[in-house]
Every structure is written in structure tokens, then in C-alpha cells.
Image 1: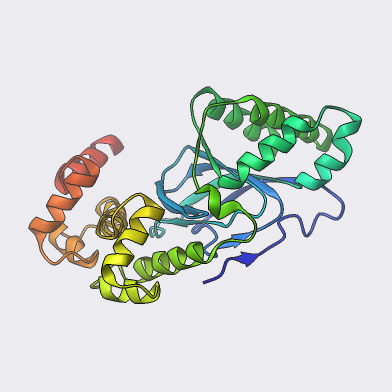
Image 2: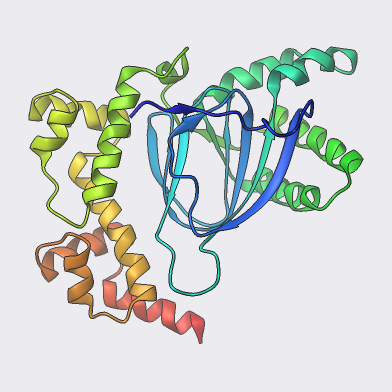
Length: 290
């Protein structure tokens, strides 16, 4: 699936930035990119996110930045049956070209150029930088237009000077249009997300990439930093975690519903990924609710 182009600021006339808080049952499920930059704070939600050619689990209290033209998507765990939204986020979009066009009247733009180039790989923030952004974004949502503009420049000042971030996507992916490799990886992700509760075929995944099975295994690990089987099990365990919290089904039923063919296998992979057994995980969460 080729990433879809969207325009994040299409309804704002000549405005160059927008901030919004979203409460929903599901994050956008379409792999997309746009010319605007995007700062995303996940207030509530968990699942997998794909930024460029990098796929990783995400949880609440995560802050990421995607530069112009970088494809991205968040797949959150399926919503529960309660009336509370399962996904909450604050998202800031801004047009980098518009900023660069008038910033020379105010400040030196070379640092902004350098930052925008780095941001084409995507960034995951942590530490004091993340804490600072959380405060700014929360205040920015309810502010007046003038105050929002001031907060935008406060965000930019933080972005330009922080070193508290991890780079996400491979550099070669961000050079020009998304590479064919990135499209192949996303097709494989989709195959797993849509079929994790059934048997996942390595042969079928290799066929999607038009590679032999050995070549596919090397290709997938080179692009995702993990084996294909580990990725499949991580997706299944994430869904199991959601069901363990929200579902009264026995653990055995949950194991089979998530694609595992035996309870011992499920227990083994669950503990290797989460560090505790499924029953301990469920007990711990239930005790936290009391």
C-alpha cells in the first residue's frame, strides 16, 4: 500500500499551524504523509506506530515528531465496550515552508533548516524535553490565538535546542519520495495486523515482498531491527494484553483468539515480551483498579 498524501491544514485558510485535542475510539488507520510537520502527544492509547520504515509499540505518555513528507500511522488497540474513548491525543501541525518564509524577519533560520532536515527521520522525545512539551501543548489547546502563536515559538525553541530524542526511521527512507522498501514493509505490517488471530505464513509474507524466505527474513530484520516471528508475537501479545484487561474470557480462550496454538506457547511468549505471566499481568492490573 502506497502512503496517501493528505493536507493537514486544508481547512484553515492562510493559517500556518493548528493544534487539536482528539478523543476517539481509533487513531487514523491510513498510512499517510503531508508537507506539514506534526508533533503528537499520546495522552491515552497503546498499540503500534509506524513512522517511515520504523515500527514500534507505543503507550500512553509518548511524544513524537514527524518531519515533512515522512509517512506515519498509529494503530491503537481495539476499543473496549465502555463509553470512554480508548484513544486521546494532542496534535500540533505547522507548515515549515511558511515559517521559513517569514522567520528571517525575526530570527536566524539556519538552526530551523537543520532541525527540519533531521526531523525527516522522525523523533521520539524523552526526559525534561517531553515534560516541557506536555505542559506547553496542554496550555496551548485552550489558549487564545495570540497565546497559541507564542506557544508555537516556545515549541520551536525547545525543538531546536534539545538533544533528548531518539531517531526513528532509517535515513535513506527520508531522502525524497518513500522508497519501495518502505511500501513493502507496510504491506507486511498490514498483513500481520489483519491476520494475527489466524495462522501467519512466512511464505505469504515473503511473497508480498517478492523474495525468497531466507532473503525476506534478512530484509525484514534489516528494516525493523527484529525478526519477523518476534514482530508477529509482539502484535499478538499486545492484543492479548487488551483482552486480559477488558475480557472475562479464560486465559486459554484469549491465547487462541490471539493466534497462539497452545497455552504453553502463549505463556512462554507473553513472559518473554512482558516479563511476567498472563495471569500475573491480569492480577496486577486488577489490583491497581481497586
